[in-house]
Length: 504
Image (cartoon, rainbow, N blue to C red; front, side, top):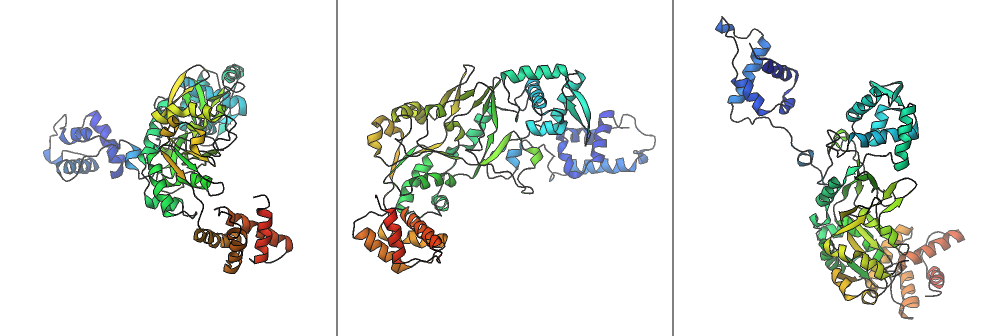
Protein backbone atom coordinates (compact mmCIF):
# COMPACT_ATOMS: atom_id res chain seq x y z
CA UNK A 1 0.00 0.00 0.00
CA UNK A 2 1.47 3.38 -1.02
CA UNK A 3 1.95 6.22 1.43
CA UNK A 4 -0.25 9.34 1.21
CA UNK A 5 2.56 11.41 -0.39
CA UNK A 6 3.24 8.65 -2.91
CA UNK A 7 -0.46 8.32 -3.72
CA UNK A 8 -0.67 12.06 -4.32
CA UNK A 9 2.33 11.97 -6.64
CA UNK A 10 0.99 8.95 -8.48
CA UNK A 11 -2.31 10.71 -9.04
CA UNK A 12 -0.42 13.65 -10.58
CA UNK A 13 1.49 11.28 -12.82
CA UNK A 14 -1.64 9.46 -13.88
CA UNK A 15 -3.36 12.72 -14.83
CA UNK A 16 -0.38 14.20 -16.69
CA UNK A 17 1.33 13.37 -19.92
CA UNK A 18 5.00 12.83 -20.50
CA UNK A 19 5.49 16.50 -21.37
CA UNK A 20 4.15 17.54 -17.97
CA UNK A 21 6.52 15.28 -16.08
CA UNK A 22 9.10 18.08 -15.97
CA UNK A 23 7.02 19.81 -13.31
CA UNK A 24 7.89 17.00 -10.82
CA UNK A 25 11.34 17.14 -9.30
CA UNK A 26 13.94 14.41 -9.70
CA UNK A 27 13.96 13.88 -5.94
CA UNK A 28 10.25 13.03 -6.01
CA UNK A 29 10.83 10.47 -8.75
CA UNK A 30 13.57 8.90 -6.65
CA UNK A 31 11.26 8.69 -3.66
CA UNK A 32 8.58 6.83 -5.61
CA UNK A 33 10.98 4.50 -7.40
CA UNK A 34 12.77 3.54 -4.18
CA UNK A 35 9.70 3.34 -1.92
CA UNK A 36 8.25 0.12 -0.50
CA UNK A 37 4.70 -0.53 0.65
CA UNK A 38 3.86 -0.06 4.30
CA UNK A 39 2.18 -3.47 4.40
CA UNK A 40 3.36 -6.53 2.49
CA UNK A 41 0.51 -8.22 0.64
CA UNK A 42 -0.33 -11.82 1.41
CA UNK A 43 0.10 -12.89 -2.20
CA UNK A 44 3.43 -11.64 -3.67
CA UNK A 45 2.31 -12.40 -7.16
CA UNK A 46 -0.52 -9.93 -6.86
CA UNK A 47 1.29 -7.02 -5.12
CA UNK A 48 -0.69 -4.28 -6.82
CA UNK A 49 -4.42 -4.58 -7.12
CA UNK A 50 -4.84 -1.80 -9.67
CA UNK A 51 -3.31 -2.80 -13.04
CA UNK A 52 -2.90 0.88 -14.14
CA UNK A 53 -0.99 1.64 -10.98
CA UNK A 54 1.17 -1.43 -11.52
CA UNK A 55 2.00 -0.36 -15.07
CA UNK A 56 2.83 3.17 -13.89
CA UNK A 57 5.20 1.90 -11.18
CA UNK A 58 6.90 -0.34 -13.74
CA UNK A 59 7.38 2.63 -16.06
CA UNK A 60 8.88 4.72 -13.23
CA UNK A 61 11.33 1.93 -12.39
CA UNK A 62 12.35 1.67 -16.04
CA UNK A 63 13.05 5.41 -16.25
CA UNK A 64 15.05 5.30 -13.03
CA UNK A 65 17.19 2.37 -14.16
CA UNK A 66 17.83 3.67 -17.68
CA UNK A 67 21.05 5.74 -17.56
CA UNK A 68 20.38 7.20 -21.00
CA UNK A 69 17.30 9.09 -19.82
CA UNK A 70 17.97 12.34 -17.98
CA UNK A 71 15.91 13.11 -14.90
CA UNK A 72 13.24 15.73 -15.57
CA UNK A 73 14.26 19.23 -14.52
CA UNK A 74 12.36 22.43 -14.13
CA UNK A 75 12.81 25.28 -16.62
CA UNK A 76 14.78 27.99 -14.84
CA UNK A 77 14.15 30.99 -17.04
CA UNK A 78 12.05 31.82 -20.09
CA UNK A 79 14.73 34.11 -21.50
CA UNK A 80 17.32 31.30 -21.47
CA UNK A 81 15.05 28.84 -23.24
CA UNK A 82 13.13 30.83 -25.80
CA UNK A 83 14.81 31.68 -29.10
CA UNK A 84 14.44 35.42 -29.40
CA UNK A 85 16.57 37.96 -31.22
CA UNK A 86 16.12 40.63 -28.55
CA UNK A 87 18.05 38.59 -25.97
CA UNK A 88 16.02 40.11 -23.12
CA UNK A 89 12.38 39.20 -22.54
CA UNK A 90 10.45 40.32 -19.42
CA UNK A 91 8.70 37.37 -17.78
CA UNK A 92 5.20 37.53 -16.40
CA UNK A 93 5.36 37.95 -12.59
CA UNK A 94 4.11 35.12 -10.40
CA UNK A 95 3.26 37.43 -7.51
CA UNK A 96 3.14 41.10 -6.63
CA UNK A 97 6.44 40.66 -4.80
CA UNK A 98 7.95 39.19 -7.96
CA UNK A 99 6.69 42.28 -9.83
CA UNK A 100 8.25 44.65 -7.30
CA UNK A 101 4.81 45.84 -6.18
CA UNK A 102 3.02 45.97 -2.85
CA UNK A 103 -0.66 45.19 -2.30
CA UNK A 104 -1.34 48.88 -1.68
CA UNK A 105 0.27 49.82 -5.03
CA UNK A 106 -2.16 47.60 -6.92
CA UNK A 107 -5.12 48.61 -4.76
CA UNK A 108 -4.41 52.28 -5.52
CA UNK A 109 -4.45 51.63 -9.28
CA UNK A 110 -7.73 49.70 -8.99
CA UNK A 111 -9.44 52.40 -6.92
CA UNK A 112 -8.38 55.20 -9.26
CA UNK A 113 -9.38 53.18 -12.33
CA UNK A 114 -12.88 52.57 -10.98
CA UNK A 115 -13.13 56.23 -9.94
CA UNK A 116 -12.21 57.39 -13.43
CA UNK A 117 -14.04 54.80 -15.54
CA UNK A 118 -16.88 53.63 -13.36
CA UNK A 119 -18.16 50.04 -13.24
CA UNK A 120 -15.56 47.68 -14.72
CA UNK A 121 -15.18 43.91 -15.05
CA UNK A 122 -12.34 42.20 -13.22
CA UNK A 123 -10.57 41.02 -16.37
CA UNK A 124 -10.77 44.52 -17.85
CA UNK A 125 -9.15 45.88 -14.69
CA UNK A 126 -6.34 43.30 -14.97
CA UNK A 127 -5.81 44.14 -18.65
CA UNK A 128 -5.67 47.86 -17.87
CA UNK A 129 -3.08 47.59 -15.11
CA UNK A 130 -1.20 44.96 -17.21
CA UNK A 131 -1.06 42.34 -14.47
CA UNK A 132 -2.16 38.66 -14.54
CA UNK A 133 -5.85 38.25 -13.80
CA UNK A 134 -5.20 35.52 -11.23
CA UNK A 135 -3.28 38.02 -9.08
CA UNK A 136 -5.68 40.92 -9.56
CA UNK A 137 -8.69 38.70 -8.88
CA UNK A 138 -7.36 37.82 -5.42
CA UNK A 139 -7.03 41.51 -4.60
CA UNK A 140 -10.52 42.26 -5.92
CA UNK A 141 -12.03 39.49 -3.83
CA UNK A 142 -10.25 40.71 -0.70
CA UNK A 143 -11.41 44.30 -1.29
CA UNK A 144 -14.93 42.95 -1.80
CA UNK A 145 -14.75 41.10 1.52
CA UNK A 146 -13.54 44.31 3.18
CA UNK A 147 -16.57 46.10 1.63
CA UNK A 148 -14.32 48.55 -0.24
CA UNK A 149 -15.75 47.17 -3.52
CA UNK A 150 -19.16 45.75 -4.37
CA UNK A 151 -20.50 43.58 -7.16
CA UNK A 152 -22.47 45.46 -9.79
CA UNK A 153 -23.27 42.31 -11.72
CA UNK A 154 -21.77 39.18 -13.21
CA UNK A 155 -19.40 38.99 -16.18
CA UNK A 156 -18.36 36.13 -18.49
CA UNK A 157 -15.71 33.58 -17.54
CA UNK A 158 -16.49 33.42 -13.81
CA UNK A 159 -15.94 37.17 -13.40
CA UNK A 160 -17.81 40.10 -11.89
CA UNK A 161 -18.38 43.78 -12.63
CA UNK A 162 -17.06 45.86 -9.74
CA UNK A 163 -18.29 49.16 -8.38
CA UNK A 164 -17.02 51.59 -5.75
CA UNK A 165 -19.25 52.11 -2.70
CA UNK A 166 -19.09 55.40 -0.82
CA UNK A 167 -16.19 54.36 1.41
CA UNK A 168 -14.22 53.07 -1.60
CA UNK A 169 -14.96 56.22 -3.60
CA UNK A 170 -13.64 58.39 -0.77
CA UNK A 171 -10.41 56.41 -0.61
CA UNK A 172 -10.03 56.66 -4.41
CA UNK A 173 -10.40 60.46 -4.26
CA UNK A 174 -7.65 60.75 -1.64
CA UNK A 175 -5.33 58.58 -3.73
CA UNK A 176 -6.06 60.60 -6.89
CA UNK A 177 -5.20 63.85 -5.10
CA UNK A 178 -1.65 62.58 -4.62
CA UNK A 179 -1.28 61.03 -8.10
CA UNK A 180 -3.98 60.55 -10.74
CA UNK A 181 -2.07 57.81 -12.61
CA UNK A 182 -4.01 54.56 -13.12
CA UNK A 183 -2.34 53.03 -16.17
CA UNK A 184 -0.04 50.02 -16.34
CA UNK A 185 1.46 49.02 -13.01
CA UNK A 186 4.96 50.51 -12.72
CA UNK A 187 8.14 48.47 -13.08
CA UNK A 188 10.74 48.59 -10.32
CA UNK A 189 13.76 50.80 -11.03
CA UNK A 190 16.10 47.85 -10.43
CA UNK A 191 14.33 45.83 -13.14
CA UNK A 192 14.67 48.71 -15.60
CA UNK A 193 18.39 49.06 -14.84
CA UNK A 194 18.84 45.34 -15.47
CA UNK A 195 16.99 45.61 -18.79
CA UNK A 196 19.23 48.46 -20.00
CA UNK A 197 22.29 46.47 -19.05
CA UNK A 198 21.00 43.46 -21.01
CA UNK A 199 20.07 45.52 -24.10
CA UNK A 200 22.91 48.07 -24.00
CA UNK A 201 24.56 49.32 -27.16
CA UNK A 202 27.85 48.01 -25.82
CA UNK A 203 26.56 44.47 -26.29
CA UNK A 204 26.04 45.13 -30.01
CA UNK A 205 28.90 45.16 -32.50
CA UNK A 206 27.63 46.13 -35.97
CA UNK A 207 29.65 44.81 -38.89
CA UNK A 208 30.18 46.13 -42.43
CA UNK A 209 27.15 44.13 -43.60
CA UNK A 210 25.00 45.62 -40.82
CA UNK A 211 25.94 49.14 -41.87
CA UNK A 212 25.29 48.43 -45.54
CA UNK A 213 21.83 47.13 -44.66
CA UNK A 214 21.13 50.18 -42.49
CA UNK A 215 22.14 52.60 -45.26
CA UNK A 216 20.75 50.58 -48.17
CA UNK A 217 18.35 53.36 -49.17
CA UNK A 218 21.09 56.03 -49.18
CA UNK A 219 23.95 56.54 -51.61
CA UNK A 220 26.93 56.47 -49.28
CA UNK A 221 30.51 55.79 -50.32
CA UNK A 222 32.83 53.18 -48.82
CA UNK A 223 35.06 55.81 -47.22
CA UNK A 224 32.14 57.17 -45.20
CA UNK A 225 31.17 53.66 -44.06
CA UNK A 226 34.75 53.00 -42.95
CA UNK A 227 34.64 56.09 -40.76
CA UNK A 228 31.12 55.50 -39.42
CA UNK A 229 31.69 51.84 -38.52
CA UNK A 230 34.15 52.31 -35.62
CA UNK A 231 32.20 55.34 -34.34
CA UNK A 232 28.96 53.34 -34.19
CA UNK A 233 30.69 50.39 -32.53
CA UNK A 234 32.01 52.67 -29.80
CA UNK A 235 28.45 53.37 -28.63
CA UNK A 236 29.57 56.84 -27.57
CA UNK A 237 29.11 60.28 -29.10
CA UNK A 238 30.11 61.54 -32.52
CA UNK A 239 30.02 64.78 -34.49
CA UNK A 240 28.62 64.89 -38.01
CA UNK A 241 29.52 68.18 -39.61
CA UNK A 242 29.58 69.62 -43.10
CA UNK A 243 27.66 71.76 -45.56
CA UNK A 244 23.85 71.74 -45.34
CA UNK A 245 21.96 69.37 -47.61
CA UNK A 246 24.46 66.50 -47.65
CA UNK A 247 22.41 64.11 -45.53
CA UNK A 248 23.80 64.48 -42.01
CA UNK A 249 20.36 64.08 -40.46
CA UNK A 250 19.51 61.16 -42.78
CA UNK A 251 22.72 59.38 -41.78
CA UNK A 252 22.07 60.00 -38.08
CA UNK A 253 18.51 58.65 -38.32
CA UNK A 254 19.68 55.38 -39.90
CA UNK A 255 22.52 54.64 -37.51
CA UNK A 256 20.18 52.86 -35.08
CA UNK A 257 19.28 50.27 -37.72
CA UNK A 258 22.82 48.90 -37.49
CA UNK A 259 22.11 47.72 -33.93
CA UNK A 260 19.53 45.16 -32.79
CA UNK A 261 16.09 45.83 -34.15
CA UNK A 262 13.93 45.75 -31.00
CA UNK A 263 14.15 46.42 -27.28
CA UNK A 264 11.75 46.09 -24.33
CA UNK A 265 10.79 49.22 -22.41
CA UNK A 266 8.63 49.60 -19.27
CA UNK A 267 5.60 51.80 -19.71
CA UNK A 268 6.27 53.43 -16.33
CA UNK A 269 8.82 53.12 -13.54
CA UNK A 270 7.91 53.18 -9.87
CA UNK A 271 10.40 54.83 -7.50
CA UNK A 272 9.40 55.00 -3.82
CA UNK A 273 5.78 55.73 -4.66
CA UNK A 274 6.58 58.17 -7.49
CA UNK A 275 5.50 57.34 -11.05
CA UNK A 276 8.00 58.12 -13.83
CA UNK A 277 6.39 57.68 -17.26
CA UNK A 278 8.94 56.33 -19.75
CA UNK A 279 7.10 55.00 -22.81
CA UNK A 280 6.24 57.89 -25.13
CA UNK A 281 4.34 57.25 -28.40
CA UNK A 282 5.86 60.47 -29.77
CA UNK A 283 9.38 59.04 -29.39
CA UNK A 284 8.87 55.28 -29.48
CA UNK A 285 7.38 53.05 -32.16
CA UNK A 286 5.63 50.01 -30.73
CA UNK A 287 6.42 46.61 -32.30
CA UNK A 288 4.00 44.04 -30.84
CA UNK A 289 4.83 40.33 -30.93
CA UNK A 290 3.02 38.64 -33.79
CA UNK A 291 0.65 35.81 -32.95
CA UNK A 292 2.08 32.41 -33.75
CA UNK A 293 5.64 33.73 -34.03
CA UNK A 294 6.94 30.99 -31.74
CA UNK A 295 8.83 33.57 -29.68
CA UNK A 296 6.82 33.79 -26.50
CA UNK A 297 3.22 33.23 -25.63
CA UNK A 298 1.47 36.48 -24.81
CA UNK A 299 0.45 34.94 -21.48
CA UNK A 300 4.12 34.59 -20.49
CA UNK A 301 5.28 38.15 -21.27
CA UNK A 302 5.07 40.84 -18.61
CA UNK A 303 2.55 43.20 -20.19
CA UNK A 304 3.82 46.13 -18.14
CA UNK A 305 6.61 46.25 -20.73
CA UNK A 306 6.23 47.24 -24.37
CA UNK A 307 8.31 45.96 -27.26
CA UNK A 308 9.51 48.86 -29.43
CA UNK A 309 11.85 49.48 -32.30
CA UNK A 310 15.23 50.55 -31.00
CA UNK A 311 14.61 54.30 -30.53
CA UNK A 312 15.96 57.14 -32.63
CA UNK A 313 15.01 60.50 -31.10
CA UNK A 314 15.77 63.65 -33.09
CA UNK A 315 15.63 67.10 -31.46
CA UNK A 316 16.61 70.40 -33.05
CA UNK A 317 16.39 74.06 -32.21
CA UNK A 318 13.45 73.43 -29.85
CA UNK A 319 15.67 71.66 -27.27
CA UNK A 320 15.63 73.28 -23.83
CA UNK A 321 17.21 72.40 -20.48
CA UNK A 322 13.78 71.38 -19.17
CA UNK A 323 13.66 68.48 -21.66
CA UNK A 324 16.83 67.03 -20.08
CA UNK A 325 15.38 66.86 -16.57
CA UNK A 326 12.47 65.02 -14.97
CA UNK A 327 9.32 67.08 -15.56
CA UNK A 328 6.77 66.84 -12.74
CA UNK A 329 3.15 67.67 -13.50
CA UNK A 330 1.74 69.22 -10.35
CA UNK A 331 -1.89 68.74 -11.45
CA UNK A 332 -1.60 64.98 -12.09
CA UNK A 333 1.29 64.03 -9.81
CA UNK A 334 2.99 62.18 -12.69
CA UNK A 335 6.64 62.68 -13.72
CA UNK A 336 7.83 62.53 -17.34
CA UNK A 337 11.21 61.00 -18.16
CA UNK A 338 13.81 63.23 -19.88
CA UNK A 339 14.91 62.69 -23.48
CA UNK A 340 18.18 60.98 -22.64
CA UNK A 341 16.34 58.37 -20.56
CA UNK A 342 13.81 57.75 -23.34
CA UNK A 343 16.66 57.25 -25.82
CA UNK A 344 18.56 54.66 -23.76
CA UNK A 345 19.68 51.67 -25.86
CA UNK A 346 19.15 53.80 -28.99
CA UNK A 347 20.28 57.02 -30.65
CA UNK A 348 19.74 60.64 -29.63
CA UNK A 349 20.35 63.11 -32.47
CA UNK A 350 20.97 66.76 -31.62
CA UNK A 351 20.19 68.29 -35.01
CA UNK A 352 21.35 71.78 -35.98
CA UNK A 353 23.67 71.78 -32.97
CA UNK A 354 24.52 75.33 -31.99
CA UNK A 355 21.07 76.69 -32.84
CA UNK A 356 19.18 75.45 -29.77
CA UNK A 357 17.20 77.74 -27.51
CA UNK A 358 19.74 76.87 -24.82
CA UNK A 359 23.39 77.79 -25.28
CA UNK A 360 25.92 75.16 -26.25
CA UNK A 361 27.75 75.72 -22.96
CA UNK A 362 24.61 74.88 -20.97
CA UNK A 363 24.06 71.68 -22.93
CA UNK A 364 27.66 70.57 -22.75
CA UNK A 365 27.99 71.32 -19.04
CA UNK A 366 24.88 69.24 -18.40
CA UNK A 367 26.29 66.22 -20.27
CA UNK A 368 30.04 66.46 -19.83
CA UNK A 369 30.07 64.02 -16.89
CA UNK A 370 27.44 61.56 -18.24
CA UNK A 371 29.36 61.30 -21.53
CA UNK A 372 32.46 60.31 -19.59
CA UNK A 373 30.93 58.08 -16.89
CA UNK A 374 28.01 56.63 -18.91
CA UNK A 375 25.50 57.30 -16.13
CA UNK A 376 23.39 60.30 -15.13
CA UNK A 377 21.67 61.62 -12.00
CA UNK A 378 18.04 62.74 -12.01
CA UNK A 379 16.15 64.68 -9.33
CA UNK A 380 12.61 63.52 -8.54
CA UNK A 381 9.78 65.68 -7.25
CA UNK A 382 10.00 64.15 -3.76
CA UNK A 383 13.63 65.31 -3.48
CA UNK A 384 15.15 61.89 -4.13
CA UNK A 385 18.11 61.71 -6.52
CA UNK A 386 18.54 58.54 -8.58
CA UNK A 387 21.35 57.21 -10.74
CA UNK A 388 20.27 56.01 -14.20
CA UNK A 389 22.15 54.69 -17.25
CA UNK A 390 23.33 57.09 -19.92
CA UNK A 391 23.46 54.45 -22.63
CA UNK A 392 22.77 55.93 -26.05
CA UNK A 393 24.73 56.97 -29.10
CA UNK A 394 24.56 60.78 -29.09
CA UNK A 395 25.07 62.35 -32.51
CA UNK A 396 25.70 66.08 -32.79
CA UNK A 397 24.78 67.17 -36.31
CA UNK A 398 25.85 70.67 -37.29
CA UNK A 399 26.62 72.89 -40.26
CA UNK A 400 29.19 74.72 -38.17
CA UNK A 401 32.77 73.82 -37.38
CA UNK A 402 32.85 71.79 -34.10
CA UNK A 403 35.93 73.58 -32.76
CA UNK A 404 34.07 76.90 -33.07
CA UNK A 405 31.21 75.57 -30.94
CA UNK A 406 32.85 73.72 -28.06
CA UNK A 407 36.12 73.64 -26.18
CA UNK A 408 38.79 70.97 -26.24
CA UNK A 409 37.60 69.32 -23.01
CA UNK A 410 34.26 68.46 -24.56
CA UNK A 411 35.68 67.47 -27.93
CA UNK A 412 37.85 64.93 -26.11
CA UNK A 413 34.69 63.22 -24.85
CA UNK A 414 33.32 63.00 -28.40
CA UNK A 415 36.01 60.76 -29.90
CA UNK A 416 34.70 60.71 -33.49
CA UNK A 417 34.30 63.77 -35.72
CA UNK A 418 33.14 62.89 -39.22
CA UNK A 419 32.75 65.37 -42.05
CA UNK A 420 29.95 64.70 -44.52
CA UNK A 421 31.43 66.01 -47.77
CA UNK A 422 29.84 67.09 -51.05
CA UNK A 423 29.24 64.36 -53.65
CA UNK A 424 31.39 64.30 -56.79
CA UNK A 425 29.89 64.48 -60.28
CA UNK A 426 29.52 60.72 -60.76
CA UNK A 427 27.81 60.34 -57.37
CA UNK A 428 25.54 63.27 -58.23
CA UNK A 429 24.47 61.57 -61.47
CA UNK A 430 23.89 58.32 -59.59
CA UNK A 431 21.56 60.15 -57.21
CA UNK A 432 19.44 61.22 -60.18
CA UNK A 433 19.28 57.62 -61.40
CA UNK A 434 18.10 56.50 -57.97
CA UNK A 435 15.56 59.29 -57.44
CA UNK A 436 13.97 59.37 -60.90
CA UNK A 437 11.99 56.09 -60.56
CA UNK A 438 10.93 57.07 -57.03
CA UNK A 439 9.53 60.35 -58.38
CA UNK A 440 7.82 58.74 -61.35
CA UNK A 441 10.33 59.85 -64.00
CA UNK A 442 12.35 57.95 -66.54
CA UNK A 443 16.01 58.94 -66.32
CA UNK A 444 17.09 61.21 -69.20
CA UNK A 445 20.86 61.52 -69.65
CA UNK A 446 20.61 64.51 -71.99
CA UNK A 447 18.45 66.54 -69.61
CA UNK A 448 20.75 65.82 -66.66
CA UNK A 449 23.82 66.79 -68.76
CA UNK A 450 22.16 70.12 -69.54
CA UNK A 451 21.43 70.73 -65.85
CA UNK A 452 24.99 69.96 -64.74
CA UNK A 453 26.65 72.07 -67.42
CA UNK A 454 24.36 75.11 -67.30
CA UNK A 455 23.58 75.33 -63.60
CA UNK A 456 26.59 73.75 -61.87
CA UNK A 457 29.82 73.54 -63.85
CA UNK A 458 29.64 76.90 -65.61
CA UNK A 459 28.72 78.79 -62.44
CA UNK A 460 30.97 76.66 -60.19
CA UNK A 461 28.08 75.70 -57.93
CA UNK A 462 28.90 72.85 -55.48
CA UNK A 463 26.88 69.63 -55.59
CA UNK A 464 24.66 68.71 -52.63
CA UNK A 465 23.13 65.32 -51.90
CA UNK A 466 19.64 66.75 -51.39
CA UNK A 467 19.47 68.64 -54.69
CA UNK A 468 18.51 65.80 -57.11
CA UNK A 469 15.45 65.05 -54.99
CA UNK A 470 14.53 68.71 -54.57
CA UNK A 471 14.92 69.57 -58.26
CA UNK A 472 12.91 66.54 -59.37
CA UNK A 473 10.12 67.57 -56.99
CA UNK A 474 10.09 71.00 -58.63
CA UNK A 475 9.82 69.41 -62.10
CA UNK A 476 7.09 67.03 -60.97
CA UNK A 477 4.98 69.78 -59.42
CA UNK A 478 5.36 71.87 -62.59
CA UNK A 479 4.18 68.93 -64.71
CA UNK A 480 1.18 68.41 -62.45
CA UNK A 481 0.24 72.07 -62.74
CA UNK A 482 0.57 72.06 -66.54
CA UNK A 483 -1.30 68.76 -66.81
CA UNK A 484 1.63 67.20 -68.65
CA UNK A 485 3.14 63.74 -68.52
CA UNK A 486 6.03 63.33 -66.07
CA UNK A 487 9.07 63.75 -68.33
CA UNK A 488 12.49 65.34 -67.94
CA UNK A 489 13.73 67.97 -70.37
CA UNK A 490 16.29 70.79 -70.41
CA UNK A 491 13.44 73.32 -70.22
CA UNK A 492 11.92 71.69 -67.14
CA UNK A 493 15.29 71.70 -65.37
CA UNK A 494 15.80 75.36 -66.30
CA UNK A 495 12.46 76.18 -64.66
CA UNK A 496 13.29 74.15 -61.54
CA UNK A 497 16.79 75.62 -61.19
CA UNK A 498 15.52 79.19 -61.58
CA UNK A 499 13.18 78.70 -58.63
CA UNK A 500 15.46 76.58 -56.48
CA UNK A 501 18.64 78.64 -56.80
CA UNK A 502 16.96 82.04 -56.80
CA UNK A 503 18.66 83.13 -53.58
CA UNK A 504 21.37 80.47 -53.35
